[in-house]
Length: 230
Image (cartoon, rainbow, N blue to C red; front, top):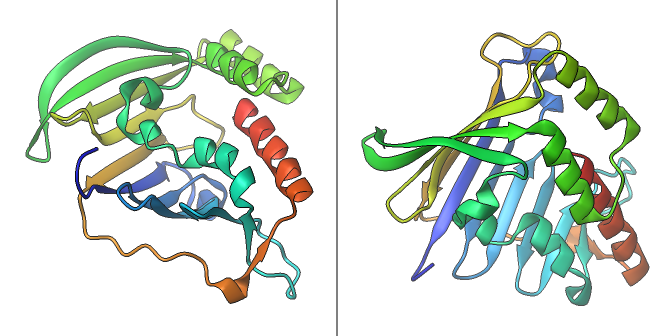
């Protein structure tokens, strides 16, 4: 991570009906590693700088401020969940829990020399390892879904990743088990654009309130539990 490095990540869920697009986890994230800045929009809105972590809880109260700020001393867990640079640059972090690399191949991706990884992710192992990391039990509803997928022989994800000569991801495609009403090309795609000139703005102070330490701890535990189940 030498010099001025930035990345913009666009993730889209494809192959679902147009009316369901608002409920799938699409996002657009801009990160400046040199200045430790990031801003992400989509299913989850958040931003961070060296001084704090900002989160949009989606409150509907018209009097509520749109953003909350996690106190500096309480923000480390949120940075680990959303803003650790290694999750974008280290292969071990990029591949999900329960992964098995089936093969690699030197290819060109949009004119760029890259190494393609073909990966299979075991859904059950993924859930178990996430659950162990977060210290929570697998939700009964999630366990039921896993068992159903196992009976149907679909308890795996086909995961393809292209990285450049520096090991930085260029594109990731995930083919999860087909949900009901999905089209035949259902997939999740993430495209990475490195070293662009990005303008990353933090939420304005007038639209931000600071969480108390108790609120921050409660939110942290909730996010950790959600991370363990998804």
